[in-house]
Length: 337
Image (cartoon, rainbow, N blue to C red):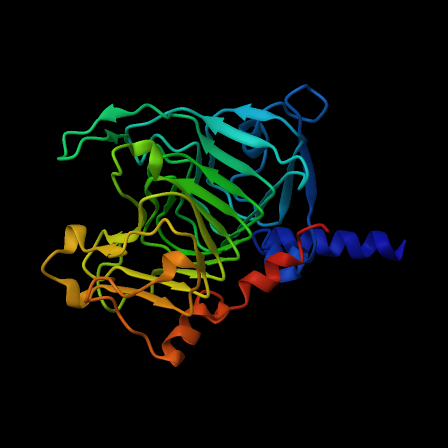
């Protein structure tokens, strides 16, 4: 009887306070798990159906579990507090083959805060190559994002992002990538996010461009000195095919740091390109610190590469760079073992 009375009181309080579940600690657990199975063994057969079933004003963590399989669809999330997960040994694949627009072509789009993905492959299957008009020949491709991330407090564990150009649009917000694989040839991690990539494999597919045409891993878009955005690669491994540049500047104050990262012999000697910020090289912050491997030879790097102090490196590689309010630790409570 007492439990019934307590339940009634809580229900009334939620109603009177606009169903603010966060105020009453209901985020201490996952409220619901929705199973998606393409063969009909779950509640839904597509990922988007499961997302659409969640209320637009969602305020409690909801898990969407994808059974093994290839889900050929575009997926967009506009609702907060969603966990998208698969099985580590047999990760599901979300794949589509659209291209030509960084806005409309992504296979997966996140436009909501507070999101976790675990054991998912995000793939854009578009792989058409066109002859390049640049001197030296080779091939061009076009925008074909596997994922576009524009929400704040988003984390990805053991996920893969696969395409050729603009694979991951790390557009804006604070993001954490752990033990992920990111593959591509041109600007395959780009945008103006504030992100740490820890223990990730960065896989170059630059050889597909042909004629030894060099690709680019990053194209970071920090627009002014006051912005806190930047891409930090911590204890990662850069591998794949050559030649590849570590990055080029997509805006005047672009910021990228590779720290404690192993680089295979695929990095161009110069390493970086000012690109859209030529003439403002003094404003760009491209840096390497404590990296190893044959690709980490800095003897012929561009002269304007930034040399950071130990304190500056520590400030950027510390989780505090993106985790000031402890959101990463809070999210890990909701990830099942």
